[in-house]
Length: 558
Image (cartoon, rainbow, N blue to C red; front, top):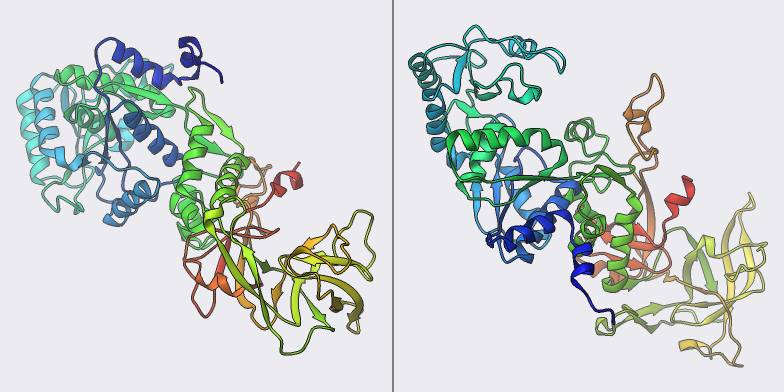
């Protein structure tokens, strides 16, 4: 067993853990993080990584993690999204210390804005959004000061109070920080702090008609909650100096921001705007469509919380953006389901087999192991009868060498049951194989045979009279290209949509699969992992393919 030294331990820490441990060594032992989603949509796998980081760091260092909703835009936000976010976090296995909302702090944020106006660090601007945008300049050209920039503090205080009372229409005025219109960081060129939005808020109703911008609200909300490590994705690194500026200007608790690389997956998009378009145009069945990268979609597809957490740990915490192979996410769910998922038999491309020397009307049951990786999972009874179905791919009329499944004159073992021999192939008028007629060895049940012979092929099956018909949805990546935005001239990302991303077939299942609850994945032996869909009913089961047994997609797209 390897002994962990200080050197090896330091190498195993990610940069956020190094920062926290340095802070602890300096005597700053308290760790307080937060996860701050905007409730304007559903969380995706990228958010899952952030959840695991923020909650995971708090757990590791004996700290706390708050859930704070950045609800500063009433036009786009809804209680539906609040509820879905809380459900997703709990599903991942985390619980927050406090549930907070940016709207909890609207009164305090307003008072701080008034303080900045009094200090000469904020002013009311009458320019339109377009004028403000044009006046900011470029990276190489300094911005242009607003004609309203030098209003007196008294005039600004009066106008800001009238904005709050609702005397002006949307877009008529904004409150801007007064910093430096020539600053090399464009965000410092008098950023907007408040805008007018006459809309009912899901928590504060019509109390407010002015709402703070993210860059103004976020750092101050962190400060109010005394967040010690405000962790966000890398695109916010240019916002950090402004985050610090507001905190210093107000002389409040000095929360500090740290950035990590956001998660990007091959064959997937994280753009909320593009995902919304897929939903609105009916390309997918909704936000929880199993082809989507949302957490609720992963749950519907049969992913487990443990597999998503394992994926976040595998990806790690980096300082530079990178693209992660979708195969890594699928690997994590395969590894978890191999240990935890019960096994069942299902035939997805059925070929009928009649066992001619098996008595008509007879039925018996064989004991099947639920999970060879987990003895505690126990066993079940599988019905067997004269007519069964096997996978069409498990039969070849002219097999190549090393084909160990069924062929004319050949033998295979039916999983948990008997050895059978193919005696006759029945075809239709077009020459298609419609039925196999076989004989069985009555002494071969339970793994033995009448003369001790062994066969290499073992195939799965279902009893014809007991088979449950089900819709089976075979999911593939939503896009045909690893980078969906990689479109040829004259084409768009929509042109890279995969027409085979969902294939519906009718499968035949062993009867015990009726009892599997929605969302719990099982392994269809030799086929893949599947789980009942939310569309499933006792009369018409619907199963989603969670993941194949092997990574076949990567081989196809090499």
